[in-house]
Image (tube, rainbow over all chains, first blue to last red; front, top):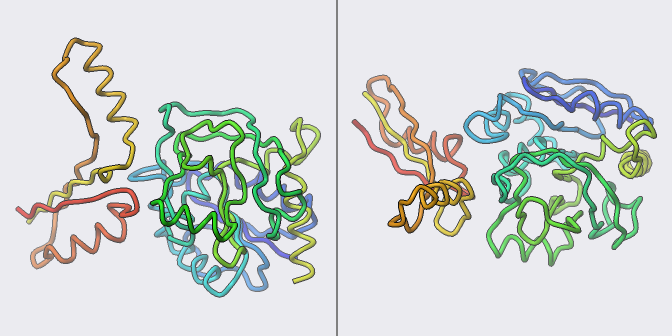
Length: 222
Length: 76
């Protein structure tokens, strides 16, 4: 099983994400943003956290228009698997692979701490290692994590069971406490919290490791 | 040839930065401020023949995120 981790100028969680994938047994290839093709035989694309292009214009906006993101979009449209974490979630909304947008945190402050997440559904390759309704603890580290979408989009996300994670105590003003959402085919996950920062005893928390472990198992079956 | 693009959060989208500026103005005694919205201005130097349609396409594809933002274009 092979994963590609996209690297933009300003990405800073790329190696953590690669390590999360590797610990779960995936081979990882780092892919530079100027590349015009994904490596062949990729099972999942990871878009890491950080500050791609210095968050200029809007978080993720420049990255979303980089050469590799056209390929990521084509990969998602073909039904490929992808996960975008933090800035990666912002990139996924900017590419319109996922609906909605991430606004400045309602409290205006950058927030870096571990928060409680309610697993809102467990019917995707990303969440099937959790029980629906379970509460896990995952770190957040963002300034622009305030998820917003129009009411019709939010209703559709809920009706289709595409809210993957909700904050137990909303830190940033996100609509309906949304911390992570799935694409309509459930193969693309975008989330603001960082499961790759909760994968090792040395990180003090392994609640994120289950996501990568079950993802790898699911990809092997697929 | 120049174009000036104004990008604002759409009405109804909470603008926490505008709210913070409003609170600061109230704190300074400017009680007459009912609301503040903060946006951005992007100036483009355009080659001859680059028209408003092209600028609109730039707005739709990059300069504004139309999920949350609206834009207006001034050609000069």
